[in-house]
Length: 636
Image (tube, rainbow, N blue to C red; front, side, top):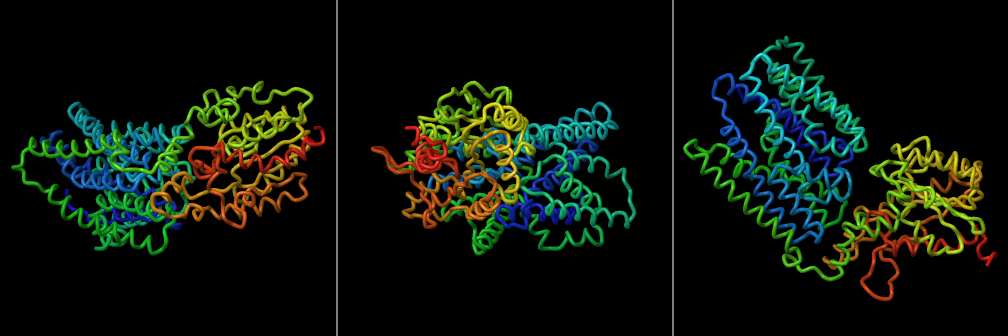
């Protein structure tokens, strides 16, 4: 296959998009679609090479995987070794375990499966993992296991059927991907069945290229349209867009058109610009190196990247990628044929075994590899606090606090337990999302004379016309249309992760509750949110002898609070400014009040959900207002 510089230029667009996205440059909020461009390129090139060997009667799976191993493994092993070494020095205990597991999964080309079972790609926890980016390598390598066998089997059976059979697999994958994006979005993002069609689109282009013949004008139009689609995708798509789904057509169709157009006078020559071609040639190493460098920088210096840090990290990643390409990638890629497969296999096996051994040691002996202070170890338990059985029981998850993965949806909500009450005691209903659920138990503790009921659903702000998922919508409809009119609660406390631009909806909800029969409504404003898990920020402060966690606050919450408070004036609701409570004088409380014994406890265990001790502090501060509204002191 003749060298095509414009494909390296397209690689450059893909990798630079990803790099700028990971450097947190706002204009590149959709830079993650660079991975989809890579998928198309890979599918096209691999299929072209496989079909050339099949048609030349020299197809060999062993030779194919030797080339893949020499292309992928050497720089990957070096990156894994250095990442594991840096992790021992810089990461917290829980992060060390997660990184070790990710390294083992990467060695098996199954990191996409690991991250699918562990993280959402766009959450803060995922962005703290230095090997998160290897998920795409897992998809590509799994594709390389499937496609050669399909091509070989169909080619031997009936070579004319290769194109229609591959087309059928692509169509099936695309349809499955559309369904999964709606029903199982995390699986659609990480798993091959929903992504196969993207690589398959490149494969179809390779299979059909010889049958297509376009004039120069049409090719120019194809190339220009392809670049427009890619640029349009970078503008239109955001991290909140359902993806891959239909949105992935922007980068995929764009890449197909650009590759199909070839080295045209306009788009082809633009993509063949030497700096772009150079970046394309180092794109694999650049993809490998950039993300760990960014993660470890943030570990040391905080989650915000200054302009100087963005520039330095970007140039540093390009430098490391250049060295990696010319000192590691190219020498191994062009090994003489006299070096036998057995020798390649033995060296590769030794390297992989060494990395696996280090990763296993990190899982078994994390405390011996790095001597952590006791308080850091105490904070480390909050890494998995959200899944702790005691915490799940504390906020009654999947019983009175639903989520998108609650089996049975609204049918699992226990109305008798969550909403049951008797006459004689005032009734208070906690209604909202997880920022309501994390307070329920603590409010109940400070108001023993009241009946504190719970109707919460994760990610479910209390807007019945905008349900986040079916269980959320069913719960809200029941509360607004059935339960409140029938029970006329003395007080409804609304608490949620309020977003900009939704203040009018919150006012409408307040008015609807009052009209339906609620006697009083209190709205709890936004709580403090951090640019990372507070427990980890505090642990790193201890390790580095600094006091910077309080500076890592998301200041946009104050604007949301001010807008919400203004919108609720005259609505009949009372507004509680939690930010003023938790950040007196602008300095936010990071530790809950000390108990009688034991280590200090953070106010929140993640970016903003309270620990039980933090919830107790907030509930105690709210108690005078709640008691006044419910007239509890007068009754006593």
